[in-house]
Length: 409
Image 1: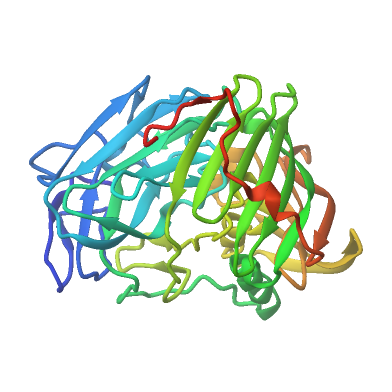
Image 2 (image 1 turned 90 degrees about the vertical axis):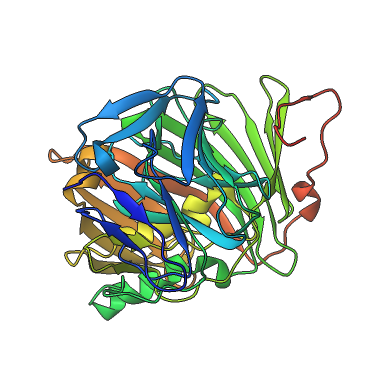
């Protein structure tokens, strides 16, 4: 499918990428591409560096130019895309995810111009272009990175492939919207994609298991999405190593209780999403537009703001199979089938999700293989909506005596 890319930038008109099975296809004020291990003749305005161990993957059909990079486990390895002498302005970031070995549930993306940070779930992300931020500021030579500081297990892989930065908040060429043709499925999908609009605060606990990466964690969370957003998330894996993530909406602090270390980052500024949340461009490439969470609920967002799972619902075979009560909430039950890509990645053929009908919050998820064995699950054990939260939990003050591993400290 993919051919070598020759990138040409046309400002304020359209971007075309020559002789491309894999093409841009969207019209933006300015768009810049950068692949991993780029050749100067292909991308004259960018280059790559990395630290840590990054395996070069070759021959995977989904990868741009048939190659990508992968690091395993919670290694802290970093991969960088440096753009040179581009137009200053506000950009958003899109990443190409199409390799089933990209499985980190919290791949951390950052940009040096704003020292911004975002945690993105590569494991459940749909095949295609996935937006990460809707806004960051660049002053001519931004450095974008992905790192593996927060992988859930040694089995998970953080992937690095083609990225693009786009100087626009709206897309001018779209062909297909995401929402399901069945209005009942579409209604739930829209709520899931905008769940943070449907409550002021939320708190609770859930257990998450994904066999493909040996993930088994309990997540406790407290999130506020009001005028002063923030979050507190505690992650306890099966081995008992506790990690905490606290956000006041502007800064995130991550605490590792085993090593007594912390990392502190500035969060990406929130920009309102314009236009459709999913579309297929004229070259047949799917594009998934993710909203940023003002509270940065991190690992809890799989429940509190389940956008990746909402994008699964584009499959026309998905259907509502019932309405039930779960945790004293009215839920809509949806059954669906995975596409070939997600099935290979997760080892599941079918899935079933229980979604809070009022808010779009995910209360339960189960995926099964061809033999009916459950291979992944999310199970909320308790949840409360709009009962007020303790915002002192959102403090990003550094504990005394802990080592700060932040690069931008």
